[in-house]
Length: 601
Image (cartoon, rainbow, N blue to C red; front, side):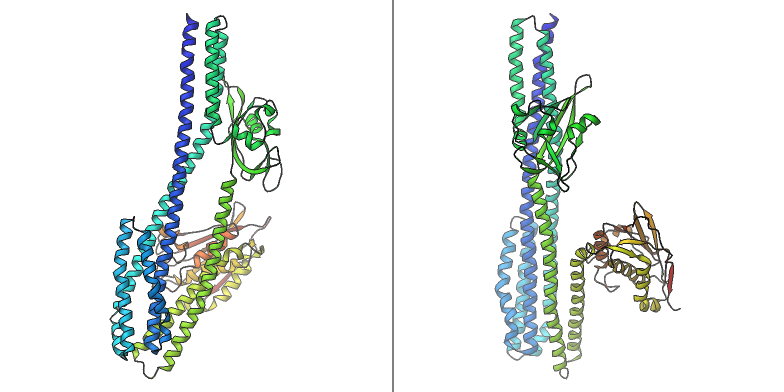
Protein backbone atom coordinates (compact mmCIF):
# COMPACT_ATOMS: atom_id res chain seq x y z
CA UNK A 1 0.00 0.00 0.00
CA UNK A 2 2.97 2.36 0.43
CA UNK A 3 3.32 3.04 -3.30
CA UNK A 4 -0.32 4.04 -3.43
CA UNK A 5 0.18 6.49 -0.56
CA UNK A 6 3.14 8.08 -2.32
CA UNK A 7 1.16 8.26 -5.57
CA UNK A 8 -1.76 9.89 -3.80
CA UNK A 9 0.50 12.64 -2.46
CA UNK A 10 2.00 13.40 -5.87
CA UNK A 11 -0.97 15.38 -7.36
CA UNK A 12 -1.17 17.58 -4.29
CA UNK A 13 2.47 18.62 -4.77
CA UNK A 14 1.89 19.37 -8.45
CA UNK A 15 -1.16 21.50 -7.65
CA UNK A 16 0.88 23.40 -5.04
CA UNK A 17 3.55 24.15 -7.63
CA UNK A 18 0.94 25.38 -10.09
CA UNK A 19 -0.74 27.63 -7.56
CA UNK A 20 2.60 29.14 -6.55
CA UNK A 21 3.43 29.82 -10.22
CA UNK A 22 -0.03 31.31 -10.78
CA UNK A 23 0.36 33.51 -7.69
CA UNK A 24 3.68 34.84 -9.00
CA UNK A 25 2.22 35.59 -12.44
CA UNK A 26 -0.78 37.37 -10.91
CA UNK A 27 1.54 39.38 -8.67
CA UNK A 28 3.60 40.45 -11.68
CA UNK A 29 0.44 41.46 -13.57
CA UNK A 30 -0.90 43.47 -10.62
CA UNK A 31 2.41 45.26 -10.05
CA UNK A 32 2.73 45.91 -13.80
CA UNK A 33 -0.64 47.62 -13.80
CA UNK A 34 0.26 49.62 -10.70
CA UNK A 35 3.56 50.70 -12.27
CA UNK A 36 1.83 51.68 -15.51
CA UNK A 37 -0.83 53.62 -13.61
CA UNK A 38 1.82 55.34 -11.48
CA UNK A 39 3.80 56.38 -14.54
CA UNK A 40 0.62 57.72 -16.19
CA UNK A 41 -0.25 59.69 -13.08
CA UNK A 42 3.26 61.08 -12.91
CA UNK A 43 3.18 62.08 -16.60
CA UNK A 44 -0.22 63.75 -16.24
CA UNK A 45 0.90 65.57 -13.11
CA UNK A 46 4.07 66.74 -14.89
CA UNK A 47 1.99 68.30 -17.69
CA UNK A 48 -0.34 69.97 -15.17
CA UNK A 49 2.59 71.28 -13.12
CA UNK A 50 4.33 72.64 -16.23
CA UNK A 51 1.12 74.38 -17.36
CA UNK A 52 0.48 75.83 -13.89
CA UNK A 53 4.08 77.04 -13.58
CA UNK A 54 3.89 78.60 -17.04
CA UNK A 55 0.56 80.32 -16.25
CA UNK A 56 1.78 81.71 -12.90
CA UNK A 57 5.02 83.01 -14.44
CA UNK A 58 3.16 84.56 -17.38
CA UNK A 59 0.59 86.10 -15.02
CA UNK A 60 3.37 87.75 -13.00
CA UNK A 61 5.07 88.85 -16.22
CA UNK A 62 1.84 90.43 -17.53
CA UNK A 63 1.32 92.27 -14.24
CA UNK A 64 4.90 93.55 -14.41
CA UNK A 65 4.29 94.67 -18.02
CA UNK A 66 1.14 96.48 -16.92
CA UNK A 67 3.05 98.15 -14.10
CA UNK A 68 5.85 99.12 -16.50
CA UNK A 69 3.33 100.70 -18.88
CA UNK A 70 1.73 102.60 -15.98
CA UNK A 71 5.07 103.97 -14.75
CA UNK A 72 6.11 105.01 -18.24
CA UNK A 73 2.82 106.81 -18.86
CA UNK A 74 2.83 108.60 -15.50
CA UNK A 75 6.37 109.80 -16.07
CA UNK A 76 5.89 110.91 -19.70
CA UNK A 77 2.17 111.29 -20.30
CA UNK A 78 2.66 109.64 -23.71
CA UNK A 79 0.01 107.09 -24.73
CA UNK A 80 2.53 104.81 -26.45
CA UNK A 81 3.88 103.76 -23.06
CA UNK A 82 0.49 102.22 -22.25
CA UNK A 83 0.79 99.52 -24.95
CA UNK A 84 2.23 96.89 -22.50
CA UNK A 85 -0.54 97.81 -20.05
CA UNK A 86 -3.29 97.26 -22.65
CA UNK A 87 -1.79 93.93 -23.78
CA UNK A 88 -1.60 92.79 -20.16
CA UNK A 89 -5.30 93.62 -19.62
CA UNK A 90 -6.11 91.23 -22.47
CA UNK A 91 -3.88 88.35 -21.30
CA UNK A 92 -4.39 88.42 -17.50
CA UNK A 93 -8.01 87.07 -17.47
CA UNK A 94 -6.94 84.20 -19.73
CA UNK A 95 -4.11 83.18 -17.37
CA UNK A 96 -6.37 83.38 -14.31
CA UNK A 97 -8.95 81.25 -16.12
CA UNK A 98 -6.30 78.69 -17.04
CA UNK A 99 -5.14 78.44 -13.41
CA UNK A 100 -8.73 78.04 -12.19
CA UNK A 101 -9.43 75.24 -14.68
CA UNK A 102 -6.18 73.39 -13.96
CA UNK A 103 -6.56 73.53 -10.16
CA UNK A 104 -10.30 72.88 -9.82
CA UNK A 105 -9.70 69.38 -8.42
CA UNK A 106 -7.14 70.56 -5.85
CA UNK A 107 -8.93 72.23 -2.96
CA UNK A 108 -5.94 73.98 -1.44
CA UNK A 109 -4.71 75.25 -4.81
CA UNK A 110 -8.19 76.34 -5.92
CA UNK A 111 -8.47 78.38 -2.73
CA UNK A 112 -5.19 80.12 -3.55
CA UNK A 113 -6.47 80.99 -7.03
CA UNK A 114 -9.64 82.43 -5.52
CA UNK A 115 -7.49 84.55 -3.19
CA UNK A 116 -5.38 85.54 -6.18
CA UNK A 117 -8.27 86.91 -8.26
CA UNK A 118 -9.28 89.85 -6.00
CA UNK A 119 -5.60 90.75 -5.48
CA UNK A 120 -5.10 90.92 -9.26
CA UNK A 121 -8.27 92.97 -9.52
CA UNK A 122 -7.02 95.29 -6.80
CA UNK A 123 -3.66 95.72 -8.57
CA UNK A 124 -5.33 96.43 -11.93
CA UNK A 125 -7.72 98.86 -10.26
CA UNK A 126 -4.78 100.76 -8.72
CA UNK A 127 -3.05 100.89 -12.13
CA UNK A 128 -6.20 102.07 -13.90
CA UNK A 129 -6.83 104.76 -11.26
CA UNK A 130 -3.32 106.23 -11.48
CA UNK A 131 -3.44 106.23 -15.29
CA UNK A 132 -6.80 108.01 -15.24
CA UNK A 133 -5.46 110.63 -12.81
CA UNK A 134 -2.43 111.23 -15.02
CA UNK A 135 -4.66 111.46 -18.08
CA UNK A 136 -6.62 114.20 -16.26
CA UNK A 137 -3.34 116.06 -15.55
CA UNK A 138 -3.48 115.08 -11.87
CA UNK A 139 0.09 113.77 -11.73
CA UNK A 140 0.61 114.51 -8.05
CA UNK A 141 -2.56 112.65 -7.12
CA UNK A 142 -1.40 109.66 -9.18
CA UNK A 143 2.01 109.68 -7.49
CA UNK A 144 0.38 110.02 -4.10
CA UNK A 145 -1.71 106.93 -4.81
CA UNK A 146 1.42 105.02 -5.80
CA UNK A 147 3.21 106.08 -2.60
CA UNK A 148 0.49 104.50 -0.50
CA UNK A 149 2.14 101.16 -1.46
CA UNK A 150 -1.32 99.69 -1.96
CA UNK A 151 -0.33 98.29 -5.32
CA UNK A 152 3.03 97.06 -4.01
CA UNK A 153 1.36 95.15 -1.19
CA UNK A 154 -1.06 93.54 -3.61
CA UNK A 155 1.82 92.61 -5.94
CA UNK A 156 3.82 91.10 -3.07
CA UNK A 157 0.83 88.96 -2.06
CA UNK A 158 0.33 87.90 -5.69
CA UNK A 159 3.97 86.79 -5.92
CA UNK A 160 3.64 84.89 -2.64
CA UNK A 161 0.50 83.06 -3.78
CA UNK A 162 2.06 82.19 -7.15
CA UNK A 163 5.15 80.84 -5.37
CA UNK A 164 2.96 78.74 -3.07
CA UNK A 165 1.03 77.36 -6.05
CA UNK A 166 4.26 76.37 -7.85
CA UNK A 167 5.79 74.85 -4.69
CA UNK A 168 2.66 72.81 -3.92
CA UNK A 169 2.47 71.45 -7.47
CA UNK A 170 6.16 70.51 -7.43
CA UNK A 171 5.68 68.65 -4.12
CA UNK A 172 2.72 66.80 -5.59
CA UNK A 173 4.76 65.93 -8.71
CA UNK A 174 7.65 64.64 -6.58
CA UNK A 175 5.22 62.39 -4.72
CA UNK A 176 3.87 60.89 -7.95
CA UNK A 177 7.40 60.44 -9.34
CA UNK A 178 8.56 58.62 -6.21
CA UNK A 179 5.57 56.28 -6.35
CA UNK A 180 6.20 55.52 -10.04
CA UNK A 181 9.90 54.75 -9.45
CA UNK A 182 9.06 52.52 -6.49
CA UNK A 183 6.47 50.60 -8.55
CA UNK A 184 8.91 50.14 -11.44
CA UNK A 185 11.68 48.87 -9.14
CA UNK A 186 9.33 46.40 -7.47
CA UNK A 187 8.13 45.15 -10.85
CA UNK A 188 11.65 44.56 -12.16
CA UNK A 189 12.73 42.60 -9.08
CA UNK A 190 9.58 40.44 -8.99
CA UNK A 191 9.61 39.80 -12.75
CA UNK A 192 13.19 38.51 -12.66
CA UNK A 193 12.88 36.41 -9.53
CA UNK A 194 9.35 35.27 -10.39
CA UNK A 195 10.31 34.10 -13.87
CA UNK A 196 13.27 32.13 -12.51
CA UNK A 197 11.07 30.71 -9.74
CA UNK A 198 8.33 29.58 -12.13
CA UNK A 199 10.79 27.79 -14.36
CA UNK A 200 12.42 26.18 -11.34
CA UNK A 201 8.97 25.01 -10.23
CA UNK A 202 8.38 23.55 -13.71
CA UNK A 203 11.58 21.49 -13.60
CA UNK A 204 10.93 20.36 -10.04
CA UNK A 205 7.39 19.32 -10.99
CA UNK A 206 8.64 17.44 -14.06
CA UNK A 207 11.30 15.66 -12.02
CA UNK A 208 8.72 14.68 -9.38
CA UNK A 209 6.32 13.36 -12.03
CA UNK A 210 9.03 11.23 -13.65
CA UNK A 211 9.92 9.72 -10.30
CA UNK A 212 6.27 8.85 -9.72
CA UNK A 213 6.03 7.19 -13.12
CA UNK A 214 9.02 4.93 -12.37
CA UNK A 215 7.49 3.97 -9.02
CA UNK A 216 4.22 2.97 -10.67
CA UNK A 217 5.60 1.00 -13.65
CA UNK A 218 4.02 -2.28 -12.43
CA UNK A 219 0.57 -0.73 -12.11
CA UNK A 220 -0.75 -0.15 -15.66
CA UNK A 221 -3.89 1.65 -14.60
CA UNK A 222 -2.05 4.00 -12.24
CA UNK A 223 0.62 4.58 -14.88
CA UNK A 224 -1.99 5.81 -17.40
CA UNK A 225 -3.55 8.12 -14.82
CA UNK A 226 -0.12 9.46 -13.90
CA UNK A 227 0.71 10.14 -17.57
CA UNK A 228 -2.52 12.05 -17.99
CA UNK A 229 -1.78 14.16 -14.95
CA UNK A 230 1.77 14.75 -16.18
CA UNK A 231 0.57 15.99 -19.59
CA UNK A 232 -1.99 18.25 -17.96
CA UNK A 233 0.56 19.75 -15.55
CA UNK A 234 3.18 20.26 -18.27
CA UNK A 235 0.75 21.95 -20.61
CA UNK A 236 -0.56 24.16 -17.83
CA UNK A 237 2.90 25.24 -16.68
CA UNK A 238 4.18 25.85 -20.22
CA UNK A 239 1.11 27.98 -20.97
CA UNK A 240 1.79 29.98 -17.82
CA UNK A 241 5.47 30.37 -18.73
CA UNK A 242 4.58 31.36 -22.27
CA UNK A 243 2.40 34.21 -21.00
CA UNK A 244 5.33 35.96 -19.31
CA UNK A 245 6.32 39.16 -21.09
CA UNK A 246 10.08 38.44 -20.86
CA UNK A 247 12.10 36.04 -22.96
CA UNK A 248 12.96 32.77 -21.19
CA UNK A 249 15.59 30.23 -22.34
CA UNK A 250 16.53 27.07 -20.45
CA UNK A 251 19.66 24.99 -21.01
CA UNK A 252 21.01 21.73 -19.71
CA UNK A 253 24.19 21.40 -17.67
CA UNK A 254 26.28 21.58 -20.86
CA UNK A 255 24.80 24.88 -21.98
CA UNK A 256 22.65 23.40 -24.77
CA UNK A 257 19.16 24.86 -25.25
CA UNK A 258 16.24 22.80 -23.95
CA UNK A 259 13.42 25.39 -23.98
CA UNK A 260 12.46 28.76 -25.51
CA UNK A 261 9.20 30.52 -24.70
CA UNK A 262 7.29 32.49 -27.35
CA UNK A 263 8.90 35.82 -26.44
CA UNK A 264 12.44 34.44 -26.65
CA UNK A 265 11.63 32.82 -30.01
CA UNK A 266 10.44 36.19 -31.32
CA UNK A 267 13.50 38.07 -30.02
CA UNK A 268 16.14 35.52 -31.14
CA UNK A 269 14.46 34.45 -34.37
CA UNK A 270 14.87 30.76 -33.43
CA UNK A 271 12.01 28.31 -33.09
CA UNK A 272 11.83 25.72 -30.30
CA UNK A 273 12.41 22.90 -32.77
CA UNK A 274 15.40 24.52 -34.46
CA UNK A 275 17.04 25.54 -31.18
CA UNK A 276 16.61 22.23 -29.34
CA UNK A 277 20.06 20.94 -28.30
CA UNK A 278 21.94 23.85 -29.93
CA UNK A 279 24.70 25.55 -27.84
CA UNK A 280 23.45 28.74 -26.21
CA UNK A 281 26.11 30.90 -27.95
CA UNK A 282 24.47 30.28 -31.33
CA UNK A 283 21.01 31.21 -30.09
CA UNK A 284 21.79 34.05 -27.69
CA UNK A 285 24.37 36.17 -29.59
CA UNK A 286 25.36 39.27 -27.60
CA UNK A 287 27.84 42.13 -28.13
CA UNK A 288 28.94 45.29 -26.39
CA UNK A 289 26.81 48.12 -27.77
CA UNK A 290 29.72 50.60 -27.90
CA UNK A 291 32.74 48.49 -28.92
CA UNK A 292 30.94 45.72 -30.84
CA UNK A 293 33.02 43.10 -29.04
CA UNK A 294 31.49 39.73 -28.15
CA UNK A 295 30.28 39.56 -24.54
CA UNK A 296 30.65 36.40 -22.42
CA UNK A 297 27.36 34.51 -22.42
CA UNK A 298 25.66 34.73 -18.99
CA UNK A 299 24.68 31.05 -19.17
CA UNK A 300 28.36 30.03 -19.33
CA UNK A 301 29.21 32.43 -16.54
CA UNK A 302 26.39 31.06 -14.34
CA UNK A 303 27.57 27.48 -14.95
CA UNK A 304 31.18 28.40 -14.21
CA UNK A 305 30.57 30.64 -11.18
CA UNK A 306 27.58 28.66 -9.84
CA UNK A 307 25.64 31.83 -9.06
CA UNK A 308 23.06 34.25 -10.47
CA UNK A 309 24.68 36.64 -12.98
CA UNK A 310 23.46 39.70 -14.88
CA UNK A 311 24.54 41.41 -18.07
CA UNK A 312 26.50 44.64 -17.94
CA UNK A 313 24.90 47.78 -19.37
CA UNK A 314 25.13 48.54 -23.09
CA UNK A 315 24.64 44.97 -24.31
CA UNK A 316 22.86 44.17 -27.59
CA UNK A 317 21.29 40.93 -28.82
CA UNK A 318 21.68 39.99 -32.49
CA UNK A 319 18.73 37.94 -33.76
CA UNK A 320 19.02 35.18 -36.35
CA UNK A 321 17.81 37.57 -39.10
CA UNK A 322 20.38 40.25 -38.19
CA UNK A 323 18.12 42.50 -36.08
CA UNK A 324 19.85 44.15 -33.12
CA UNK A 325 18.33 45.64 -29.98
CA UNK A 326 19.54 46.46 -26.46
CA UNK A 327 18.68 44.00 -23.67
CA UNK A 328 19.20 43.32 -20.01
CA UNK A 329 19.03 39.87 -18.46
CA UNK A 330 19.91 37.52 -15.63
CA UNK A 331 20.88 33.85 -15.60
CA UNK A 332 20.39 31.50 -12.64
CA UNK A 333 21.62 27.94 -12.15
CA UNK A 334 18.99 25.18 -11.85
CA UNK A 335 19.93 22.61 -9.24
CA UNK A 336 18.69 19.12 -8.56
CA UNK A 337 17.32 18.08 -5.19
CA UNK A 338 20.87 17.01 -4.31
CA UNK A 339 22.28 20.47 -5.10
CA UNK A 340 23.89 19.53 -8.42
CA UNK A 341 23.61 21.97 -11.33
CA UNK A 342 21.20 20.56 -13.92
CA UNK A 343 21.11 23.59 -16.20
CA UNK A 344 20.50 27.34 -16.34
CA UNK A 345 17.42 29.50 -16.80
CA UNK A 346 18.03 32.76 -18.70
CA UNK A 347 15.49 35.61 -18.49
CA UNK A 348 15.92 38.66 -20.75
CA UNK A 349 13.95 41.55 -22.20
CA UNK A 350 14.13 44.11 -25.02
CA UNK A 351 14.85 47.55 -23.49
CA UNK A 352 14.69 49.57 -26.72
CA UNK A 353 11.78 51.66 -25.42
CA UNK A 354 13.60 52.40 -22.17
CA UNK A 355 16.72 53.44 -24.09
CA UNK A 356 14.63 55.72 -26.31
CA UNK A 357 13.03 57.26 -23.22
CA UNK A 358 16.48 57.91 -21.72
CA UNK A 359 17.66 59.58 -24.94
CA UNK A 360 14.49 61.67 -25.06
CA UNK A 361 15.04 62.76 -21.45
CA UNK A 362 18.62 63.74 -22.26
CA UNK A 363 17.43 65.70 -25.30
CA UNK A 364 14.80 67.45 -23.20
CA UNK A 365 17.42 68.46 -20.63
CA UNK A 366 19.65 69.86 -23.37
CA UNK A 367 16.73 71.83 -24.84
CA UNK A 368 15.93 73.18 -21.37
CA UNK A 369 19.53 74.29 -20.96
CA UNK A 370 19.46 76.03 -24.34
CA UNK A 371 16.18 77.69 -23.44
CA UNK A 372 17.64 79.00 -20.16
CA UNK A 373 20.60 80.42 -22.05
CA UNK A 374 18.50 82.13 -24.73
CA UNK A 375 15.96 83.43 -22.22
CA UNK A 376 18.62 84.88 -19.94
CA UNK A 377 20.49 86.37 -22.91
CA UNK A 378 17.36 88.03 -24.31
CA UNK A 379 16.39 89.48 -20.93
CA UNK A 380 19.43 91.72 -20.94
CA UNK A 381 18.10 93.86 -23.80
CA UNK A 382 14.95 95.14 -22.02
CA UNK A 383 16.99 95.67 -18.84
CA UNK A 384 19.40 97.90 -20.71
CA UNK A 385 16.42 99.79 -22.11
CA UNK A 386 14.94 100.28 -18.62
CA UNK A 387 18.30 101.47 -17.30
CA UNK A 388 18.89 103.95 -20.12
CA UNK A 389 15.31 105.27 -20.00
CA UNK A 390 15.51 105.75 -16.22
CA UNK A 391 18.80 107.61 -16.56
CA UNK A 392 17.39 109.76 -19.37
CA UNK A 393 14.26 110.64 -17.42
CA UNK A 394 16.21 111.40 -14.25
CA UNK A 395 18.49 113.80 -16.15
CA UNK A 396 15.71 115.42 -18.15
CA UNK A 397 13.50 116.06 -15.12
CA UNK A 398 16.24 116.55 -12.56
CA UNK A 399 15.22 120.17 -11.93
CA UNK A 400 11.60 119.23 -11.14
CA UNK A 401 12.03 115.86 -9.36
CA UNK A 402 11.93 115.93 -5.59
CA UNK A 403 14.30 113.92 -3.39
CA UNK A 404 11.94 110.95 -3.13
CA UNK A 405 11.52 110.71 -6.91
CA UNK A 406 15.28 110.79 -7.35
CA UNK A 407 15.56 108.06 -4.73
CA UNK A 408 13.00 105.97 -6.65
CA UNK A 409 15.05 106.43 -9.83
CA UNK A 410 18.12 105.31 -7.92
CA UNK A 411 16.31 102.23 -6.66
CA UNK A 412 15.29 101.39 -10.23
CA UNK A 413 18.88 101.66 -11.42
CA UNK A 414 20.09 99.55 -8.48
CA UNK A 415 17.46 96.86 -9.12
CA UNK A 416 18.27 96.82 -12.84
CA UNK A 417 21.94 96.37 -12.00
CA UNK A 418 21.18 93.54 -9.60
CA UNK A 419 18.94 91.84 -12.16
CA UNK A 420 21.62 92.21 -14.82
CA UNK A 421 24.16 90.53 -12.53
CA UNK A 422 21.72 87.70 -11.83
CA UNK A 423 21.18 87.18 -15.56
CA UNK A 424 24.93 87.18 -16.18
CA UNK A 425 25.34 84.52 -13.49
CA UNK A 426 22.52 82.50 -15.05
CA UNK A 427 24.19 82.75 -18.48
CA UNK A 428 27.43 81.57 -16.92
CA UNK A 429 25.68 78.68 -15.17
CA UNK A 430 23.92 77.55 -18.37
CA UNK A 431 27.19 77.39 -20.34
CA UNK A 432 29.57 76.05 -17.71
CA UNK A 433 28.91 72.32 -18.41
CA UNK A 434 29.86 72.43 -22.08
CA UNK A 435 32.94 74.49 -21.25
CA UNK A 436 34.06 72.04 -18.56
CA UNK A 437 33.61 69.05 -20.86
CA UNK A 438 35.65 70.68 -23.59
CA UNK A 439 39.37 71.27 -23.71
CA UNK A 440 41.13 69.20 -21.02
CA UNK A 441 44.85 69.24 -20.48
CA UNK A 442 47.49 69.15 -17.76
CA UNK A 443 46.84 72.19 -15.55
CA UNK A 444 49.29 73.30 -12.85
CA UNK A 445 47.21 74.19 -9.78
CA UNK A 446 50.17 76.03 -8.27
CA UNK A 447 50.22 78.47 -11.20
CA UNK A 448 46.44 78.84 -11.01
CA UNK A 449 46.70 79.66 -7.29
CA UNK A 450 49.33 82.32 -7.94
CA UNK A 451 47.20 83.93 -10.67
CA UNK A 452 44.15 83.84 -8.38
CA UNK A 453 46.03 85.63 -5.60
CA UNK A 454 47.10 88.32 -8.07
CA UNK A 455 43.49 88.80 -9.18
CA UNK A 456 42.35 89.21 -5.57
CA UNK A 457 45.07 91.57 -4.37
CA UNK A 458 42.60 94.41 -3.77
CA UNK A 459 40.39 92.34 -1.44
CA UNK A 460 43.45 90.80 0.27
CA UNK A 461 44.99 94.20 1.01
CA UNK A 462 41.66 95.70 2.10
CA UNK A 463 40.92 92.95 4.65
CA UNK A 464 44.49 92.11 5.65
CA UNK A 465 43.80 88.50 4.67
CA UNK A 466 46.55 85.88 4.79
CA UNK A 467 46.25 83.45 1.85
CA UNK A 468 48.66 80.50 1.77
CA UNK A 469 49.04 77.22 -0.12
CA UNK A 470 50.96 73.98 0.26
CA UNK A 471 52.39 71.99 -2.66
CA UNK A 472 49.72 71.77 -5.38
CA UNK A 473 49.68 69.19 -8.22
CA UNK A 474 48.93 69.25 -11.92
CA UNK A 475 45.50 67.84 -12.83
CA UNK A 476 43.56 66.82 -15.94
CA UNK A 477 41.19 69.80 -16.38
CA UNK A 478 41.05 73.26 -17.94
CA UNK A 479 41.53 76.87 -16.91
CA UNK A 480 38.06 76.87 -15.34
CA UNK A 481 39.73 75.46 -12.23
CA UNK A 482 40.87 79.05 -11.68
CA UNK A 483 37.24 80.18 -11.59
CA UNK A 484 36.50 77.59 -8.88
CA UNK A 485 39.55 78.46 -6.78
CA UNK A 486 38.94 82.21 -7.06
CA UNK A 487 35.29 81.85 -6.05
CA UNK A 488 36.18 79.79 -2.96
CA UNK A 489 38.89 82.23 -1.82
CA UNK A 490 36.60 85.23 -2.47
CA UNK A 491 33.89 83.57 -0.37
CA UNK A 492 36.41 82.91 2.42
CA UNK A 493 37.29 86.64 2.45
CA UNK A 494 33.66 87.77 2.16
CA UNK A 495 32.29 85.54 4.93
CA UNK A 496 35.06 86.39 7.40
CA UNK A 497 34.62 86.70 11.14
CA UNK A 498 36.06 89.30 13.47
CA UNK A 499 39.56 87.82 13.27
CA UNK A 500 41.92 88.49 10.36
CA UNK A 501 41.05 86.07 7.51
CA UNK A 502 43.37 83.04 7.40
CA UNK A 503 42.94 80.99 4.19
CA UNK A 504 44.97 77.91 3.26
CA UNK A 505 44.86 75.81 0.07
CA UNK A 506 46.21 72.25 0.11
CA UNK A 507 46.01 68.97 -1.87
CA UNK A 508 45.89 65.26 -1.04
CA UNK A 509 45.92 62.17 -3.30
CA UNK A 510 42.95 59.79 -2.88
CA UNK A 511 41.57 56.96 -5.09
CA UNK A 512 43.27 58.04 -8.31
CA UNK A 513 42.31 61.70 -7.93
CA UNK A 514 43.56 64.87 -6.24
CA UNK A 515 41.39 66.34 -3.49
CA UNK A 516 42.05 70.07 -3.17
CA UNK A 517 40.81 71.89 -0.04
CA UNK A 518 40.28 75.59 0.75
CA UNK A 519 40.19 76.16 4.52
CA UNK A 520 39.26 79.43 6.27
CA UNK A 521 38.58 80.79 9.77
CA UNK A 522 35.38 82.66 8.85
CA UNK A 523 31.83 82.57 10.18
CA UNK A 524 31.18 79.02 8.92
CA UNK A 525 27.73 77.48 8.55
CA UNK A 526 25.49 74.77 10.02
CA UNK A 527 26.09 71.37 8.39
CA UNK A 528 22.32 71.04 7.93
CA UNK A 529 22.83 73.41 4.98
CA UNK A 530 25.89 71.58 3.55
CA UNK A 531 24.00 70.63 0.36
CA UNK A 532 21.72 73.66 0.17
CA UNK A 533 24.64 76.08 -0.31
CA UNK A 534 25.44 74.40 -3.65
CA UNK A 535 21.93 75.08 -5.01
CA UNK A 536 21.18 77.76 -7.60
CA UNK A 537 20.33 81.15 -5.97
CA UNK A 538 20.65 79.58 -2.50
CA UNK A 539 22.02 81.96 0.16
CA UNK A 540 22.25 81.46 3.93
CA UNK A 541 22.87 85.14 4.75
CA UNK A 542 20.31 87.00 2.61
CA UNK A 543 20.74 90.76 2.84
CA UNK A 544 23.92 90.62 4.94
CA UNK A 545 26.34 89.98 2.09
CA UNK A 546 26.25 90.89 -1.59
CA UNK A 547 25.96 88.15 -4.19
CA UNK A 548 23.52 86.19 -6.36
CA UNK A 549 23.81 82.82 -4.62
CA UNK A 550 24.94 81.03 -7.79
CA UNK A 551 28.73 80.97 -7.34
CA UNK A 552 28.98 77.62 -5.53
CA UNK A 553 26.47 76.06 -7.93
CA UNK A 554 28.75 77.06 -10.83
CA UNK A 555 31.79 75.68 -8.99
CA UNK A 556 30.16 72.30 -8.40
CA UNK A 557 28.95 72.14 -12.02
CA UNK A 558 32.49 72.84 -13.29
CA UNK A 559 34.01 70.15 -11.06
CA UNK A 560 31.37 67.57 -11.97
CA UNK A 561 32.02 68.36 -15.63
CA UNK A 562 35.56 67.07 -15.07
CA UNK A 563 34.22 63.88 -13.46
CA UNK A 564 35.00 65.06 -9.92
CA UNK A 565 32.83 66.06 -6.98
CA UNK A 566 32.58 68.95 -4.50
CA UNK A 567 31.54 69.11 -0.85
CA UNK A 568 32.11 71.12 2.36
CA UNK A 569 32.65 70.73 6.12
CA UNK A 570 32.04 73.49 8.66
CA UNK A 571 31.27 74.46 12.25
CA UNK A 572 29.42 77.77 12.87
CA UNK A 573 31.85 80.41 14.10
CA UNK A 574 34.91 78.21 13.47
CA UNK A 575 35.37 78.49 9.73
CA UNK A 576 34.70 76.17 6.80
CA UNK A 577 36.64 73.87 4.48
CA UNK A 578 35.55 73.34 0.86
CA UNK A 579 36.83 70.27 -1.00
CA UNK A 580 36.83 69.34 -4.68
CA UNK A 581 38.36 66.37 -6.49
CA UNK A 582 39.96 66.34 -9.95
CA UNK A 583 41.39 63.50 -12.09
CA UNK A 584 45.06 62.89 -11.36
CA UNK A 585 47.69 62.58 -14.06
CA UNK A 586 49.51 59.22 -13.93
CA UNK A 587 52.75 59.51 -12.01
CA UNK A 588 51.98 63.06 -10.96
CA UNK A 589 52.97 64.44 -7.57
CA UNK A 590 52.55 67.95 -6.15
CA UNK A 591 55.13 70.43 -7.30
CA UNK A 592 56.85 72.89 -5.04
CA UNK A 593 54.09 75.48 -5.37
CA UNK A 594 54.00 76.57 -1.71
CA UNK A 595 53.21 80.24 -1.66
CA UNK A 596 51.76 82.95 0.52
CA UNK A 597 49.91 86.20 -0.01
CA UNK A 598 49.32 88.51 2.95
CA UNK A 599 47.42 91.76 3.02
CA UNK A 600 48.78 94.90 4.65
CA UNK A 601 48.18 95.16 8.38
